[in-house]
Image 1 (cartoon, one colour):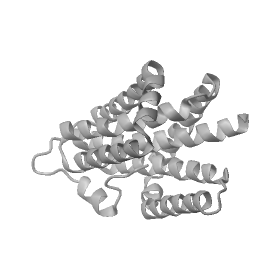
Image 2: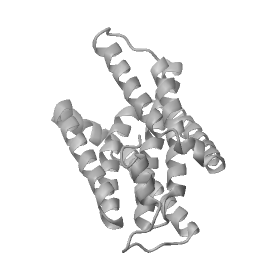
Image 3: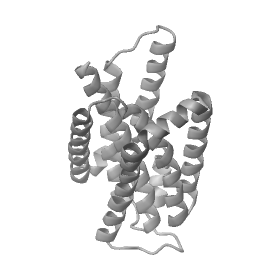
Image 4: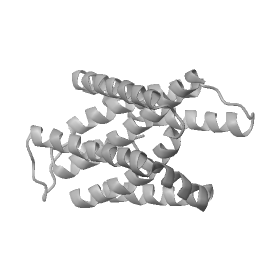
Length: 230
């Protein structure tokens, strides 16, 4: 989920170098985005494979409400650091987001067959690469989707909550809608990354947005596949 700096105003602000910015090469810019993404995914992988059960037990021991409070505090603080800080502060903020997200991933993959998780990872990778290619070909189209995607995501979240809390039902249709939204968000944020000035700070910030898009896409695809298995 792209939660920071998705407005057209921020896109325009990041398009140009500021007084203290140093422009880097396109290759270095993309390598930094890739490296930051890899770090986030590697961190989550290590959390799941090495400490998964301990993390789940810890969350169960502390209770859902304290975990949710801690989760949102870390995500909000991390988002502020990413939006307002330089490259180093942005990377610290990125880790503040990746850690609680990793806890959520641990809970979501618990009890799901390894083969299903691996297939979900593969499908996520294919979808991610496909939408990055599409955004490279037609960046203008994806950049025009910002407001629509934000509204669609909010409306779907509200509809999902109403269905669960009021009607005590859940429809798998929501997973498909979320999958479509986050797929488009990947294209949007990749086009946004390519429209920004090539600085280390922008590379870290854009990687953080893409990380959330890809993780959310993975979790929705995993939910669809696990439901089919059931």
